[in-house]
Image (cartoon, rainbow, N blue to C red; front, side, top):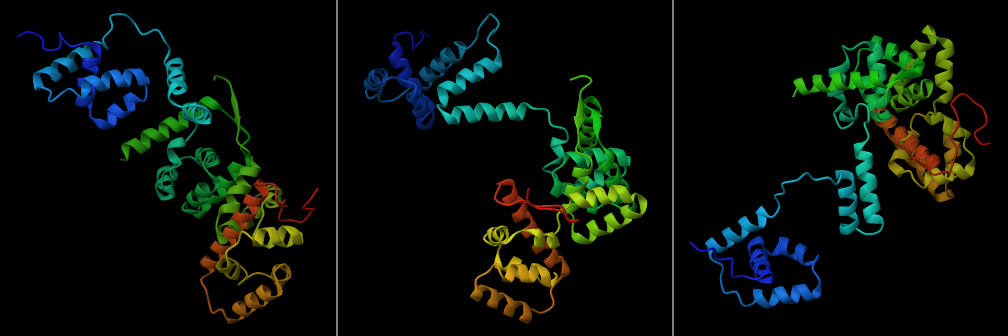
Length: 338
């Protein structure tokens, strides 16, 4: 049987191919064509009444065959992708895409754990050596690490916090060995010589700061009995709700703008008079009076709700500090501003 596409010109073949591919794909292809090319193809397309099955199968075979090459593709993939993005996305969009791909290529330790439920992480690593657990938690987000820590047996919690605080540098190859072994364990359940600085006492303080208050206070108290100097170092780096009293009035007012009324009322339920007065005087007279009346009328509430509200306010304070709007100090005295 004679080939039905042999008598077709290039623009006629394109017209048939676009009809076979459909409107969505064809519209994207038209964007890469010049107005003159679109007009030329359009003339032929508007004259087509129907396309026989044999013709478009033949045309698709010809089209796909054109992609085969006998030689190697010598253009590196990173260069090809960069050129492809530069032709597809212009300006900041293209730059952001290239930057995002480069970031995704980075080898990040324990990246696979960051989207996993803390309960699964805790069950997976609880039987590991405390030093290994400390290494893993040091690489997780502080909020996730604190939840994982709280799910572990209490004696192990203290051992892990102590080891986190004493971590300094660890060979990179060892970190990735632990990561690979952990990934294999999760899967079964459903540069040379470089050193990575893990943060030590600062990381331990940040994780304890994210724990619920009872867990954090208990661990610090137990650590005090085991290593008072280390406990003091951690305590000085922590910032707890009562430390808000050290903020100046301007910073308190800045913070109150970011706080929900229900969080503020709950957070003040168990706090000191000093903190309450600090808040009252930085509200309008009417707002202060209403808050005091609400606190007086408030009935019993769960301690966990109070602690959650205080954590929300602390999170808002830390966000403002990151934005440079306020400066937070440690929990054991000292100047807040320099």
